[in-house]
View: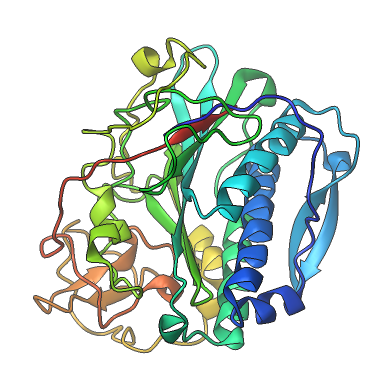
Length: 370
């Protein structure tokens, strides 16, 4: 099911405090409160980082030494208005346990090229026996994720030449007639041929009750043509395993609910914008900056700087580019060639290289917003 945003002046409290993160691991409802705030903060801070919105539209906040931004009231900026209207529908879908994915599209007006896309996937768990996360791990993952958003690569996009769209994907079981506030239903995705199987993983956070995983894709993420490796689904549902959903996403998209003609023509004109391997996209210094939080320590399972790397890229990259051993075949490969910006997001015991990673076809339900 898909939906498209209309106007609204409703907002919710945007500040995320340490107490919110600590409480998120205690109950499903407290976790839901945390997720709603984190999703809205992520959306706004991607806009802040990627579009040339004036600094005067934002106010700085802090979470355990990591800065993030909230909006100033009564903004007339086009992107902030879109954000406000979108937020109402997004929060409603999370509150009802309907929201499965949120996709953000930055499309160039003149060429209809998709410049960048972002995807956030949400998993739900109401079984307290499986909710075994600690407040410390949730705090650490939250801070690292926000910091990753702060360090999104590339120069800002020029707002006057950008169209910004939001698309929501619903869970199975969502009523066919459901329509989030400020959205309208539509039958197909904004760009149905676009896939996320070659995107870069930006982070993953779990409270035990909810799991959020984010991906980015576009010219600024042109580091690898390979998909993000498989993770074990902590909630035990392999059919919903995120990485299994990525391989054929968009090739066989189907929906249970009707779409409107929200952006007629974009589906025909948008470009697939496949990522391609580019040696000079990230310099060593830029990569060191991204990995500043781990530059002086090794992550468990990845401290093999002298071991020979046999990666699918075939490149002899400097040691700046961390490697990891495939849990299946034993080859050591560059994690950056498998969609990871930081070793902090890799679980060595589950990591599988591109040659060993399984794939499967999937159908997807979604929702649009502008």
